[in-house]
Length: 174
Length: 174
View 1 (cartoon, helix red, strand yellow):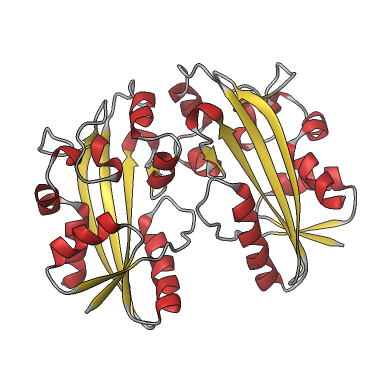
View 2: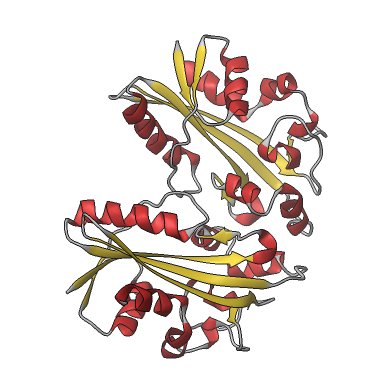
């Protein structure tokens, strides 16, 4: 049994679908340090999770990196969601010429001694308007490279076949 | 002698000018938790500072809250500065009708037992373009209420007479 410490039911369900092994959610809202890079945050979170749960566990952190904004919002994307919201955010970016972005996920496993990382990155672009209602977070404004649909216009299964989270979990298993 | 734990020389100099008492800078870049509200962050930072420095000490945190963006970027303003930059950020906000914003500063003193807070808030608006070269951070896009100049167009002394940081330190002293 693997323990995944996350307050996000959506992330847990994605991970469960990807990992195809017994996975248990421990729903804790861990404080996260301020950073743009998810690597830094996931390491800090894994240590904190281990200290609280006292069992080897998994955490993950995800970011949306917009090239023309030098990587903003990165790991701070959830704060854009909580304040501005993706509709208004897309509207603020309407005149952006270079719309390239990437999604990054870092999964970190910590057993009290050793950190183990899995990383996944997916290139894509920012949609001029939010589209779709599936999945969650900034999926409605992210169009993965090679597709016309945003992640929110894809089914969970369709998204998980190509997602940054899938790549990160696969990297960890290796 | 009072110890002010901050990695920002600018903030230290402002505090020194405001407090008019012996103040020593301890330059530590403390990890900050993710939040929009400065209150939360300053409390967390004060505890961390005390644990590292092992002396009663002061920390502060500052945020810029834009009303039409539901308070964004708040305490995360420095990450907007590090990535997007204030010029480009002002440009993204060019069509914003409601330009009201406020600056907030929370100073926290912790001696290992008791927390003591000072809070300061200044209303104002976001300038359509950055103006001025004085002071620092988002001073170039913040116009305090009742003025035409941004804080970056004022001298340090002029800004400190009306600043959120002055109000916060004055609140703490009381």
